[in-house]
Image (cartoon, rainbow, N blue to C red; front, top):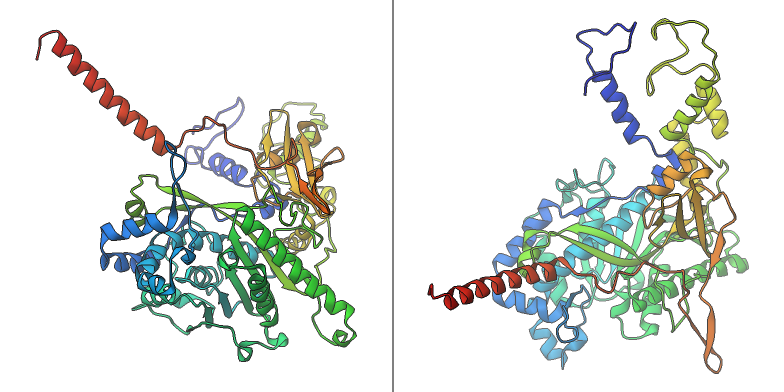
Length: 575
């Protein structure tokens, strides 16, 4: 990019446009405010690490490919109405077998099919949640032990090993592929699962891999001797991923969640499918764990305990009742989505040419102790967009009486450079933000303050003059936040770049509107929520066409046109 040369300006032949390019590059990466950047930290599309891909490829090479595709289609492909496309899922339900003997005969084949299709999908969702948790908690937090209910083929194990590495580093598509098991900070893993076929495959995937200091063990039940003293559970995670909905009754789910609470782990992570059943299971588990924490404050015997109670780390910005949960009659789920780049073995097994897949999931992360309270508020609200507005306002107030070269006038410098316009100093900008903090202090202030920021639980509606954000707020309500252009360039820019699942730091210009589901009587003593006209995820259009169907239609159209041409030539006597 050539630098535009003004009159009376001297340009060095060697400088060219490097400085200007650097300034524009920095400007592009720092336009969002620090608070908005913190609230929108996501890992992007997940790429399966090479070590895990190689292990699954080795497993597939030993199996019958035709039989594998048949097993995958039988377990994870749901046929729809005649003439409509089927849907791939990752829900494994062994209850479909007529007897336990039949299920045992198919356990090995089912495990291979599960590792081929469901493991990568579950891995991406668990990785997304664990990485978010790592960013939300204090930098000194270090994980060394994992207790995994519903371990399956090891999706939770692999995700935890790749999330908590030594030294700690953020996850991204650029550095995830090179993650290895030996570099993990985890030293102990306990997998709990009665499905022997899946556990056998999990052990086979780890054959020949350098485990470093990692100790692995699996068992069918969680025993009392496996419990950890509460004082030693700071570095322990109790994990249950995509397991709750596979349990037959609500009592079984409650027993599993109770075991997680009594395990002594300070952090409890529950993940399930973003379906009505999955969301209700997560919401019920969330309420149970919070109620157990509230009981500790009511019990006199716990007064001397160093840690009492429990709070939600993510995704909820509150510890109240879920505004979307209506037991037994939920219509709208609180769920999120994670994209994964499909490995070649997934595309071949599914007979699909699509290179990505979106995994929908619901989750909750509960931690022992009281909910953190921010001592510093409204920090990090000005990014490069807001800074430039302040610089422009200050520079426009300066009266220049004579023509001078840029280099001779120290008050006006290049945007993004070291010089600052007259009247705009670092102190004035910090005063505008009301918080002069170092980068480390700013990060900690944002971390604590973000516990009360609204969470975007639905896709934003982005209009030309305003942005509509339907969010779950600290008041335990679904509120509609409207951010207009008139609120400010920085706020509008941050809202325009916000995505589903982000935390949004800016309060709206006008009072937010509460969105709720009205109720109507369905039976005596019961109510059924009715979908509101303006709440919920944005539906796809009825005439939405998938890429696979579009490809089939194009191929069929080419065949028809070829037959028509041949028929026409036959009529003309060419053939």
